[in-house]
Image (cartoon, rainbow, N blue to C red):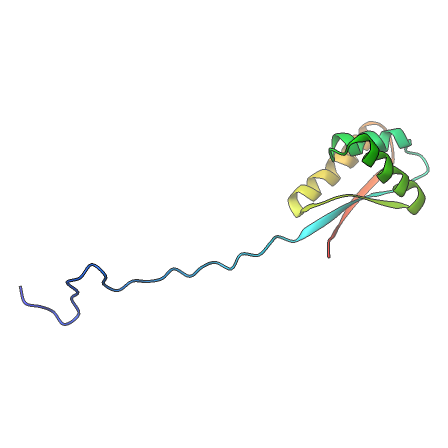
Length: 108
């Protein structure tokens, strides 16, 4: 068989280098509890322990921050997780007839 001008007899041949994807960390979101005058503090502590897995001392600290500052940081998560936690808090509060509000905002 005659040699063709572009035929390569070596294993090396032409190699295509795959472009490395440029990975970026996903944007993170803060989950925040908002103060109200009706939700009992022990209920807020229990939410922080069950939904956000905070130990008792940290849950009480965050609850006091919500009470005194009007807002408290529960944690920083990816968007899907943050949205899920907000929904869990609101649903649990409604089931227990408390007006507790929870929201998220993009972390800086």
